[in-house]
Length: 100
Image 1 (cartoon, one colour):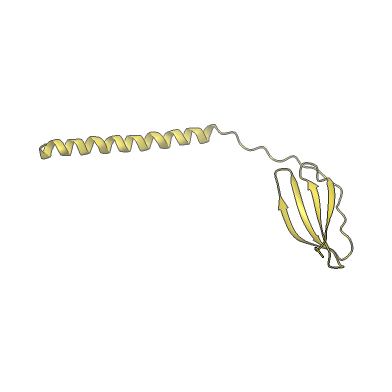
Image 2 (image 1 turned 180 degrees about the vertical axis):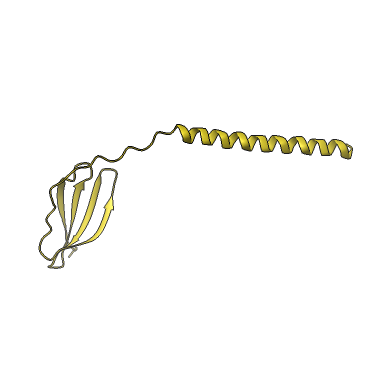
């Protein structure tokens, strides 16, 4: 293959590469533009969750529809408090005890 044919081949391949990247960018931009805006979360007012006197929240973790609080009580023991994220309602408490 002579040098001129090689230069033409490189130019064509470069044009195809640039065109493909441009088409990919346009496609991604189009998909992002069609995505609906996220809806704001519905506001709610939940009753307060009362912690025992001297208790403190040590850790917090969330799941898809729950929040779990690890509460350290004033006597040194701990418990888990489970709250429904959709309503803010207290679902229950689980006392934590050390194994003997």
